Image (cartoon, helix red, strand yellow):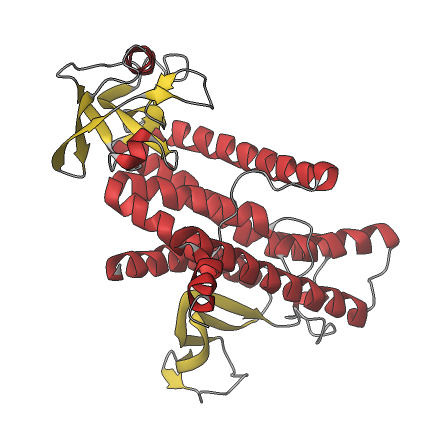
Length: 389
C-alpha cells in the first residue's frame, strides 16, 4: 500500500510538473514574467530567486513577489504550479504581462501544458515500444516489423458471484494450463468451458511470479447463455519495435489514444444528455491510485503504459471548454477574438470560480464512488452501524 501511494504521487507529480513546465517555457519565450514556479502545492516550505549576479537569495514563506522568478518547494506533494504575471487580468499595460500579449500568444501559453502532456505520453510510449510494451494481440493490428513475445491469456474482468470469483481468480491472472492442456486462443477457452458445464475443471494460474492451482465448475452464464466460469479474457503479448521505428509508432499510438479518449468523452456526455445514464467507469484520485496498484502488480512495462494513458486523459480533460480549465480560458480568448473586445474581468473570474467549485464537487463525488467501489462504501458501513442502534 505504501509503495502504491508513493508511486501514485510520483506519477501525478511528473504529469503535473511537465504540464506546468510547458506553461513556464512558453510564457518566458513570449516575454511574460513568471512570478513563481513551484514544486508541490502551497503552503510554501522553501523559496529562492536568482538575482542579476547569478546568486540565489531566499524569499519569505508568504512572499508573493521577487525581482525574478521565485523557485519554491511546497508542502503538498501534488505536482506543481506556475504563477504568470497578469494571468488573472491585472497589469495588462506592463510589457511583461500575460494580458499585454496578443490573443494567439496567450492561447499558445495556455495550450502548452496540454501539449507537453501529449509529448510526455509519446515519449513514454516510445520507450515502452522500444523495450517492449504489453498490448492486446490481434493479427490485424500488429505490423509485420513488430516483435511479439511472451503471449498469454489474462483475466481482464471477474464477474461477481461467478465460479471464477468463488475459486479466487483475480484480474490480471494469466491462465497457464486448463486440465493439463495449454490453450492459446480465447475461442479455445470459450469452447472448452462450454463443453464442461457442471464438471470440475482444474486450472494452473500465474499470479505475479507465483503458480497457483485451483478448480472451477463452469455454469451457464446469463450474459452469454453459454457455459463459462464468469471472466473476460484478453490475449496479451509484449510488442517491441526497432529503436529507429519506435518513435513513429509511439506518436501514432499517442494520436490514437487522444482520439479514443475524445470519443469516450463524447459517448459519456451523449449518454448523460439522452438517457441520463452514466456509461463506463469514472475514477477520481482514490480510484486512480488503485489502478496504479494494479499496474504495479503487473510490472514496470504496464506502469509506463498507464502513466502515458493518464497523461493523455489529463490533457484531454484540461482542454475541455470548461471554465477554470485551460480549455475554458482558451474559450474566453476565442470569444474575445470574435467579439473584438474582452469579456469583463469580473464575469470571467466569476465563471472560473464557479467552474472550479463544480469541479471540486465532482472530485468529491467521484472520490466517494471510488471508496464505495473499493471498500463496499459508506452505505455498507452505515448499515453495520445502524444494526447496533
